[in-house]
Amino acid sequence: MAVEIRELRDTDVPALERFLEGRDRERASACLPALRDGDARGFVAASRDGGETAVGWVLVHLRLRDDQGFEPGGGTTDFQGGGHAYLENVEVMAGSRGRGIGSRLLERAESDAMGHDVHTLWLHVRESNRAAQRLYERRGWVRDRRVEPTWIDEPMLVYRLVLEAPGRVEP
Image (cartoon, rainbow, N blue to C red; front, side):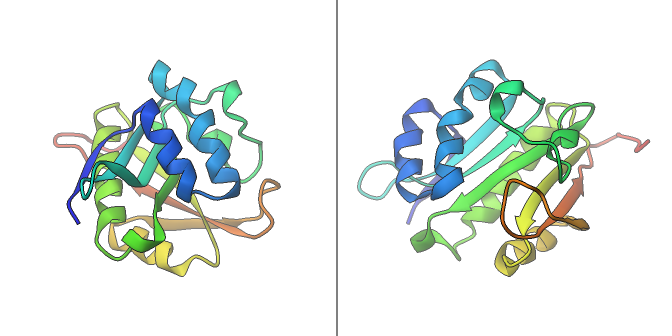
């Protein structure tokens, strides 16, 4: 399967909504104003087999916005702005997993974040999602803490990645 990682377009949302579930499906449409205004960056893994279909996506919030529905607790609102960004979603359609697409999406998001003066990326992952944790850890993400946010019914792990840009001196 030939897959291209490119910027997320409004026209990708219906394809994403077909494989996303629950809250993630709602988030695909809700993020569009932030993407249009440059307060978030999104990338899609688009399969070119038999046309172009979204098979994965990643969303990074560069700045906190009131219209994104983030609830206090678990650190989500603290991870946006001031050199920090929040990686809200990275998801690959079940039938496309295990092919390096998630890693390629993360690589693109990480590289793009450096270009927006982000020095630390943050994310939450379900404590039960060991496959995602292994992916993040292989890419250099470090587990920061365990939280029990009000917006989900199970514990989450917070991971962070300090981005290294050539010539940057860490504070």
